Image 1 (spheres, rainbow, N blue to C red):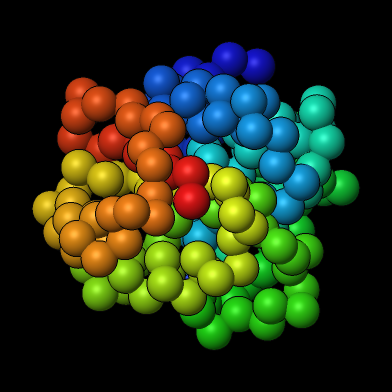
Image 2: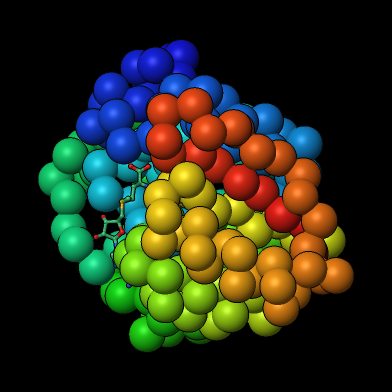
Length: 177
Ligand SMILES: C[S@@+](CC[C@H](N)C(=O)[O-])C[C@H]1O[C@@H](n2cnc3c(N)ncnc32)[C@H](O)[C@@H]1O
């Protein structure tokens, strides 16, 4: 299945080239434990799930809002064994349900600046050294503001390893920590 089709199945909330970049990151860093905050109908969830189905690993997908479309997508692509859905709200998540340390974290939940900061700081301590933290919608003003604050305070601790560019006003950014 190509990334255009995955994007369409998931309601086009991520661009196909961002999904391609996400897939490339997973293939490059081969994370065992992947956590995503914010699934909606599953553009990122399907992409991560399909990648780990091929190369190993597991996806822990956190989103408090149930989605039948997401459930159907996971079922139709045969991804049930590769994705654990956690219908809870970050950061009030039962960390015992997640395999630690986290190797790959995707932050794409509440895009309010403070919430992005809370997600980053809460989960960062569970991400292993040299692990990856990716942020989606990094071109949104509110997310951009959070990124600027993180870089001001944490700039010696994160190294940019991927950026999709501003094309289309969403954007995927990834750091190695
Ligand atoms: C931008 S969408 C995610 C898009 C998704 N990654 C995709 O590929 O289509 C944001 C999602 O974050 C979820 N969300 C909002 N606040 C959240 C929180 N505190 N914890 C987890 N998910 C949250 C919303 O329910 C919504 O489904």
